[in-house]
Length: 585
Image 1 (spheres, rainbow, N blue to C red):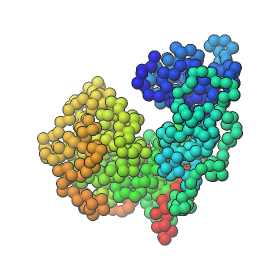
Image 2: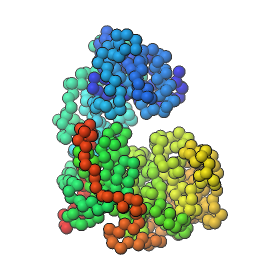
Image 3: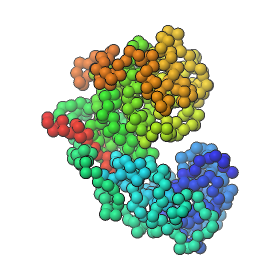
Image 4: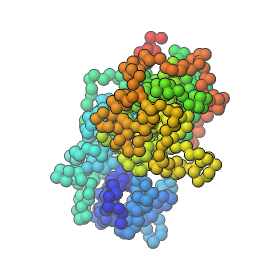
């Protein structure tokens, strides 16, 4: 049987072109699960049906006994899967080992078929929607906006809620024929067999709305009279034809980054180009949505790379962002090896202000590293790349996703614990150590020559267990701040006290010489100013990128046909502050 303290299991049930996302207790019985499937699929009480779960190799395995269900849950827990996928068929196989009628093995291939996805929570049947006008979440009361369809609407009672909040709300569906108010929407099922009349309403009664205008009369969004269309970046759109592509300046696993010129103004920007074919899964869509939203938020801060605009073609997404031409800290560290303490203090102070700003907006950065710290033409820093950010974190709240760059991952993530903003202060400690010592705090002498020590697993073991040794050449204050940030206990880590977190950083003796108000206003002169001949100077970018030919590969129509373009509705955006400036050019 599964472990007693195992959290609820996310179940993705596929039937007849629809997917219902629900959450079940790990101790659920097979009879209770069959009841849930019968309700979801709207089967009568005498309808025979078959449940099959998909194992880690993508093969369907029948679910008909308690032993088979327990094995599915055991492997789900063992493999740390994100969800348990179950396909339901309205019949039984003609013989053991035979497929069900209408069962096609192609449906088990990832991305092979596009399903209509629904989420059942507290009796609600939520469907992802896009809202062009002001719509507000019934749980957190914040506005629902951003890329694609991050708002959920119940197809029964029309309740609106953020995707990130849909499990947090306790309000039950007023039109749900199954769950009554006195159950308070608890997800536990009753093992007694319901009558044949007890079934979900046919979703054909709730047809797909035109996603371009989802403000039907029976919806309950609230228009904000203070918000005009041009304030949310809808009054102008850009396209690739508005830009001259100049040079490749970076490349990652998902994206290529180009230096471009906006033809109308002759201003230089960076353009991040992402192929849609690489981001068609739900998790990837969420990643792009988060990055766009954080880019918009970051546009108001001096030490974060901001957003100019977003647009798309049938095959690609385009982020037009600030071009920060001084290069990244990794590039400069490779030349200088280590930095003077005064330089490291300046950069880490500006980084602290950027991180604190994100934290006050409920955002964990989660990807602080030398590569993501850029220098502008004056020598001030700017953080970039928000793909790993986690939004919606209030003070004291946590998340649990295992992610980050291996050398910077905090111990609490490696231990599988829930975590909050503490992981960013750990990463700052690692980065500050690298700036001051010229090496990682987790470097092991001779590790590169020992295959057993040159692995991620060994690195994680070192992060968890090794005592970090501070170089004797560093000052007492520098050693103290490093020990504070690199405390393996997040409760005791510098910056992590719930009451005085950031205040503890700015009052630390290492930062005593910093005038924080002047620093935030960029009134403190940087210790180093990059040498740049012009606004197109690429001397601070690696030649392996800048020597690449600058072009976008031709579209493959076969690939485009498989992309669900509705996933990217609402992606277009123009920064309203930049619009007003450009109108005066």
